[in-house]
Image (cartoon, rainbow, N blue to C red):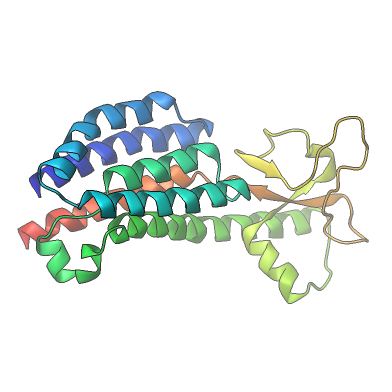
Length: 235
């Protein structure tokens, strides 16, 4: 179990650096992932081929399923490239948590893949919880700024929580908001960019998706799981 904790501390530390880069510049250096592999690979190989934790066949099947799923999510543009790499790195080096106090208290973590899946899911939930009020307050501010007082359908109200309104003239200015991703098919040489306007009456505002620094929230989730793991030995 000590090897697992060492590996988790290494990952938490390096993901902390990646989280800072992701939040500040929305760009994570490849050296972070290279360093993670160099430091964690020897421990992972020892666990697999000496300790047989988890069995190699289970490990390979788990990795295949995770990677195929993450590639599918990346293909439909749900996550950025750095997010995809971060997910794969986590699944490679945290395939299963060894038996110990944490698996006795949370028996579900003994199932291969559930510990890392818990890290990823919690990170995504934290991101959603943080950005929903940010999106909502931003959108309310834009409506007030443009003097818009119309009624919206339930679907539109949900969109207010997960997307942001931006002025149509700012669609080519990515510095308008950090990590902004515009919802349009930008084709050079064509005026029609297939923008999604707020409404037929208010075409000056279009919907966009704010790029969420997923790795930042993954780091917070890893830190929580690390503390939980250590607490299992202390309590």
